[in-house]
Amino acid sequence: MEFRRDKILERIHNCTPETYRFIDEWLDESLYITARTSGSTGAPKAIRLLKADMVTSAISTNRFFNITDKSSMLCPLSADYIAGKMMIVRAMLSGAQLWIEKPGNTPVCQEYGNIDLIAVVPSQVQHLLDNQRTLKRLKHVLIGGAAVPRELSHRITASGVSAYVSYGMTETCSHVALRRIGESSDEIYEAMPDISFITDSRGCLIVNSENRSFHSLTTNDIVRLIDDRHFVWIGRFDNVINSGGIKVYPEEIEKQIQRLIPEDTEYYISKCRDDKWGEVPVLVLSKEVENAKKMLEDIRTIVKSKAERPAGIIVRNIEYTSTGKIIRQQFI
Image: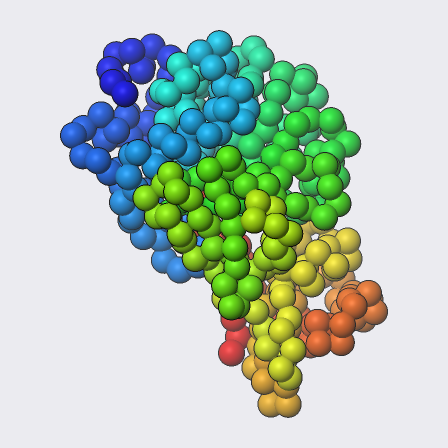
């Protein structure tokens, strides 16, 4: 497929320096582009991605959302990272109009008319929901980069907007599965057309595709596999807490206790060394809260399993990756 810089720039608007750099890299003679991982499981690193894989991924997404040369898209994400790069590739392949915005928590900074697809991270969704006039102009919202909190999911469902949570990583050239918010309380992800799934001996997801160069990619994501095209995400293998031989998943605990955490407080479940049980879960808060002792007692009451009940509270500054994922500290 032939691309010309001048023709591309006729349909991609408000280009940032990162956007220009990516377009120039896309148009060079190399078969690869360089992308950076988000740093959610370690220090961010540069990796090479095959342009042909990015084309396959973009075509799949364009077909799913019916993106054509009559469509308009908006990208308030940096082209330094895969989500931003892939929006540009989708526009180049489809001929759609694409408006670029500098990343920030208040996207849709001007009047664009109707937008067929906007790609955002969860921290940007709140602003969209607070602006009904803007929301009504968005046909589909694609959310990635970090987990979507349950309360935010409820607000999205109540708004009536068509919103999808993506599952994927830089190595897979953006998402390989999507989950429509509000469609099922089980939070089931469905594979993109050229993708299928199996699990390994750990219960971690393996992504298979005959059309992409990785063919088979083993992840560290523990899932409940429904069939070879559907799964429910449980948590990260890296985060598993082994408490007296019982495997405890922090992400599962976080879902249970969310409503008991003050709205202005960030939190996550981590693990701490314990002489009796080996490891135990602990609740990490971004700041001191009133009646912390009472809150912990309430949490221990609603958490299903004794092994899942936090042993205590740790207050510390919570850090995030560039895409808004919490960087989890462990205390072992």
